[in-house]
Length: 212
Image 1 (cartoon, rainbow, N blue to C red):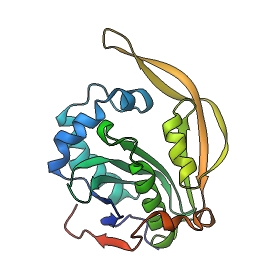
Image 2: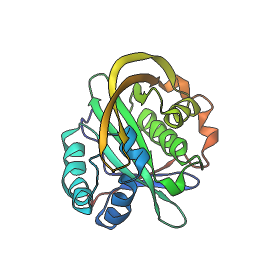
Image 3: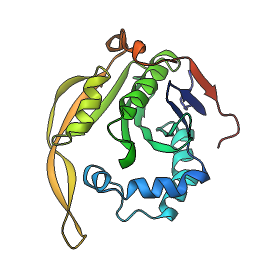
Image 4: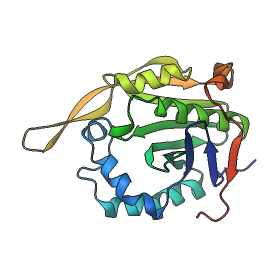
């Protein structure tokens, strides 16, 4: 079997997940500068358009070609607006396991986009890529991310004590690190029984042959 993710587009009722491209730079930089993103991820702050461009042109393609992971833009089907990002990382091709994470733009939160995108990615991984395990890690106080994990059927496996570094921004704009716990979640193929009803289209897997 292959040990590299293909160029892929995944369609749901409301969303299209596709490779990042140059046109995403402004929206990606704006999204990554959000305070919630700064608090719960290791995204550098402030996040410049040059960083976004380097991610799109260098980091994401290298992750895919090396087999380590996959970065997908999540866009609205009707408007093409960038809703967020789905990222696969720490992929183990022998075990057929990968770690999934997601970021949603501030304006798009509360619409169920994260769970819709994560579920579509999981279905693609289990059906098309024959993966056997997806892992998620959420900071102990990041309840929104935990709700997404629960909604798509993940099972909480336990707590990694003191394994997460969250961030707090002071009034002067500077950030400081705060150590907290990681909650570990897993998703196996059998956990998705019946979950397909939450998506209108689970067969929209389209290859992107020109993206590199």
